[in-house]
Image (cartoon, rainbow, N blue to C red; front, side, top):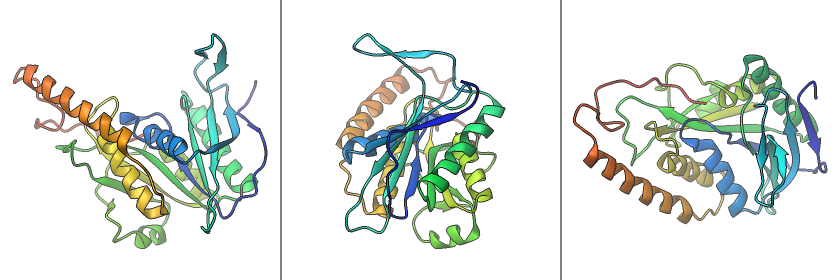
Length: 257
């Protein structure tokens, strides 16, 4: 394999599709949201992306087999709605700058040219100074002033996030803008947790309301309860000179991926 390839199981005729991109990143926010939507809405896989820019390893399967690392496209068909939903998630992102450019541009071209895509949501975590992990905000940056204006009163926080958006969450929007596809990056406020269900739920709740999705959040709520208990225990055990995330005066780097 010399370049990134997308293997299509079948081309689906979709209604003005939007795409939700949730790949591994800070707090696993995007990946958790994407996988939750896929499971709750019984999404159908339609294509798989492979790339030489992914880590050079295979995943061992429960039945004893293996598979290459990949990104996967799923479809949710929505009767009675004007748009269908494409969800992109997967095992990894490209691990080189060249790979990030190639893979993410290919994703945008496939969505626009092959699926007729109209709008993209990329998802991730945002490490904000002094954040409150139990009551996270959802920060946002968009491809155009028109998108920002259309979501002005939605509860999203525009104009306060700083720095850069690393990886697919940012690069896909950059290429979407180049290809004249509107989009927005939704960033759940995260406190450096490896897995942050608080931030994931904040993003999921916004998306559900925005897209008219009826989503059960019980699994995320269970994760939130377990995380809260673990944080309390860590806080009890941690010495004063090592404050818990969000409680100290240090300012963590503000970026997402």
